[in-house]
Image (cartoon, rainbow, N blue to C red):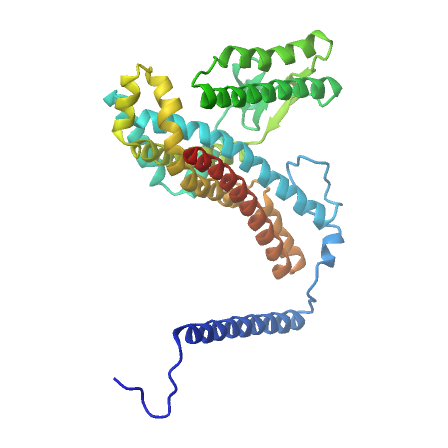
Length: 386
C-alpha cells in the first residue's frame, strides 16, 4: 500500500531512534515534575532538601549494635548500626540457608519414600506460607522459652531463654588473630593443593588424593599455633543474678529473623538444587557407574559440576531475596536498616533523603552479591569449555 500524501517514510533505525528519544524526554519530564512537586511540598512544610540532618543527634535507642552506640550519637551512626545489623543477618543467613537447602534438595531425591515425602511436604508448606507469618511465629515461640533463671541448657555453654540465646564467645586478642591466620593459611594450602592436582589430572590423567593432606594442613596449622602458645580465650556465659554475663548474646528478634529467613529461603534453594541435579542427563550417572565410581564421588565429581550451571543463576536470586526480605525485621522489632530509617523519617521528616539512602544501600548490596555470584558462575562456565 503506498504511503499517504505528505508523509515521508522513515527507515526502521531512524524510527526506533526517535522513539527512544521520545521515551528519554518523557522520563526526564516525569523526573523533573516529581522533583518540583517534592520541592514544593517540602517548602510548604518548612523542610529543605539535604543530608545535613545526618550530623544531628539521633536520640534513637537501638537495642543491639555490633559497634558502640548511644542515643546521643548522630543519625549517620544510627543508620550505620542498622546497616551492620542487616549485613549480619544477611551474611549468616546466606551461609546457613545454602547448607540447609543443599541437604534438603539431596533428600528430596532420596530413594527412601518416607524421607522424600517428608521433605517434599516440608518444602510445600514453607514455600506456600507468607514469610511475615513465619517470622511472627518464630518470634512468639522464642518468647515462650523459660525465664533466665530456668534457661534451657541443651549444650555446654549454650542457654536458651526469653532474652534470647547465649553462646560462648572468643575474645578479640592477638592469640585469636594468630589462630585465625593459621586456619586461613591451612585453607589456602588445601586450595592450592587442589589446583595443583587438577592441573596434574588434566596434563597426565592422574590425580593424587587430596583429602588427607588437605585436612592435615587445615588442622595442623592451627594446632601449631596452639602449640606455640597462641591459645584463644573463650568467654563462657554465666548466670549472675537475673541475667547472664559473658559470652555472645543473640536477641530473640535476631534469632527469630535468622530462623525465619533460613527456613523460608532454604525451601526454595532445595527445589533449585533438585531441579539442577535432575537436569543432568541420566546417561552421566550410567557412565559414571560403568567406571566403577561410588555414589558419593559420582555426585561430587560428575553430577554437581554440571548441575551448578543450572543452579547458580536462580540461587543468586534467592540470595538477593533473603537480603531484601530482611527488611521485614521491623515486624518483630529487630533494628535493621529499614527499622532505623523509619524512625529517622518520623523524627526528621526527611523522607526522600532517608529513603534514597537505604535504596542506595540495598542496591549496592545486591550489585555486590550479583557480581560475586556472576564471577563464580563464569568460573563454572570456564570449566565446561575446558
